[in-house]
Image (cartoon, rainbow, N blue to C red):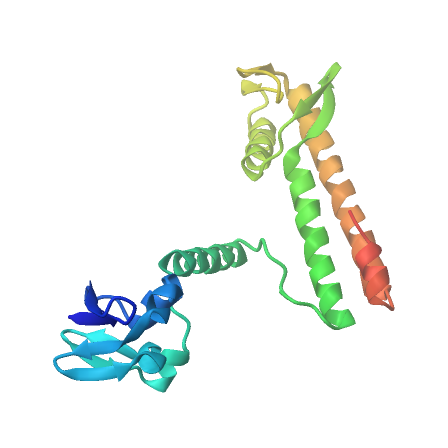
Length: 223
C-alpha cells in the first residue's frame, strides 16, 4: 500500500489502492501532491518532487520506465470509440462507401476520389426510383437492385408465357395490383431509359474530371 505523509498536518494521510499510479493521482488531483513532503513506504522515503516518477505495483513502489512514463494514459472510452471508428471505416470500404484516397494531395488523387463520388451518386440516384406513366397517371416507382431484378424477371416470364398474371405497385401504394403485359413492359422500358440517362450523365461528368487540369476544376464538378 502507499502511505502519504502530508507536511501541512505532519500526519500520515492517505492510503491509495494498488490499481492507482501516482501519475494518475497527480493528473486527477495535482493539489494533493503539492501538499506532500514525500512518500513513506516500508521505511523507504521518496521526496515529493520525485513522486510522479513512481507507481505502486502490488505492495511495492517502483520507478516508472521511461517509455511507460512518457506514454499517455489510456482512456478506455476513447480507445473504444477509436476501435468502432476503425471498424466502421473498414466496413464502409468493404461496401465501397468511402473514397479510395483518404487524404488526397495530388491532382490524380483528387480525380480518383471525384470519379468515386460521382459513381456513388449515380448509383444512389438510380436506386432512389423513377416516374412512369405506364398506367396512365405519372406515378413514382422504387428501383432498388431487387426491384430491377424482379421487373426484368417478369419481362422474361411474359416473353415465355404472355398470359402470366403480373402484380406490382407504385411507391405510394400499399399492396400490389394486377399489371397488364403492356403496362409491365412500359414500366420496364421507362426504368431502363431512366437508368441509361443516369449512366450517361455519370460518363459525361467522369470525362470532365479526366480532362480537368487543376484540383479546383475537379472540386467544382458535382452530380
